[in-house]
Length: 285
Image (cartoon, rainbow, N blue to C red; front, top):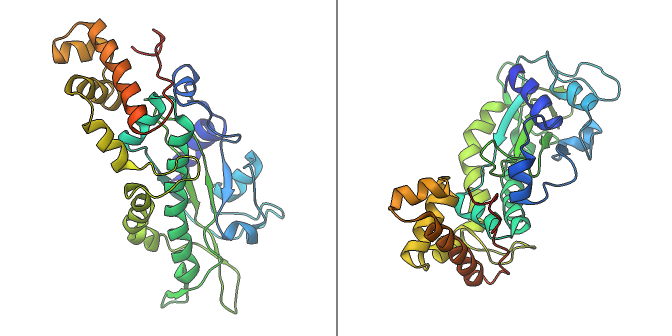
């Protein structure tokens, strides 16, 4: 994550400059109380918690390396302030937003994010620092990161961002602050993603969306009649408009709207969720 990315997130995430409320918020309901929140085991040692203020954002992710949010003392000198992770919604999970269960969808994505970060945090605590010329792996206080809960992409999909600070508190006798071993993060990123996806793919319980995972939604889609399944995939998952979907399958737009409505209702019933399908003309385009 370079300085350009820091500026981008200051404007588009911290200040919400590219949120698209006309589509995304109506479609996906709430996005949480705060755009950016501090997290990670190492955040305690740095003295940051809760909502990210512009001032604390600048001290941790500003140019030249992180400063202490309270004393403004330079803690590390780095060219890159950190690493950015983007947790994109699996298209099958995004379908929950269409059938009126946005909070269940967000609960699943939050669980994925939390499991992914818990793995990276554990690895960072165990060996996330480097000491001396030999770059000896050293224990640390853990990750320091800022994350958005329900940020959205320009396509309207939920798109949580996590900004990992290039900063760790060393856990050996010498202590102090060092730049994080970002190579370690990259090496473990695939494993962390697999850990994050696995419980939901296996359908484990999520508190506000019990028993719903990627495979459950995929199976429910397969059980739909062919026409309903086709229009749901083309419109809701691929992103075609009703007109484009009608042209693709050579059917009247009215039929496409009907199949969408019945398909969403059937999908909600299969998943044992109360359907609140979008039916307003402005919502199905």
